[in-house]
Length: 325
Image (cartoon, rainbow, N blue to C red; front, side, top):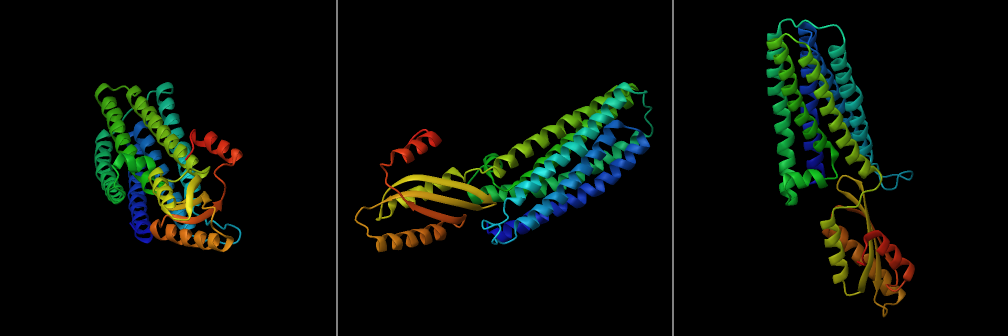
């Protein structure tokens, strides 16, 4: 999938989620005020957190597309990971913490009387339908991207360096689960007359949001601190390097994701001893161009001539990978 097309798809997916979450947040807040349900108020906080998340993701999409400049020669691609990390913090602070507060207030405070639960049921049902629309939109994009990469959906979600659609799909999945928890809390409160169930539902929603925030934060932290590129891409690059007539062996291959579908690649190569300096320069230029043409994800390629027998370099490679390349 082309970068521009993929970026447009991601933006549309986020905008759909933003509009839906904003509308749902208002409906849940009104229903929570009418019914007095802690679980409903927790879900309102959940939707507010999701709305903030979409704003952060839109910021990530816009700022990460800025071209490279003298101050940031590798571009601004990692801003997408930073703003996605901020989105994870937002989910925890404005969603999980609020849900915990509402839950514990209901459990240990004055018993809450439930009023007009039918309003809550209607809002939850409507919210489930709207969230399903956003979830299907995100799932459709993830499925298309996975098919383009020859991956299963789960493998694509695990390996993808694009946190945007992954975040939307994850938060929409959590939103659907949260609605079921809110429905259970509201329904059991209605059936038993005990607000304990409502409080437990709110706490369960808080736990769910905390898990989502942790998963998102962990994913983006790995990308921010310098995660290597997809192993299949690296294996293909290594194979193409080894096939070149000027190359005796590939001694080391370093990579880092510097943005979505943008990879920094540094190859330490033992070139043929018969090459003079001019031939070596021509080989480096040719191989660089060949790699960029065959692998569009390679944003920058560095080829460093090294002797394969260098003991210090071999020791570093062994320490990093556990075996020579």
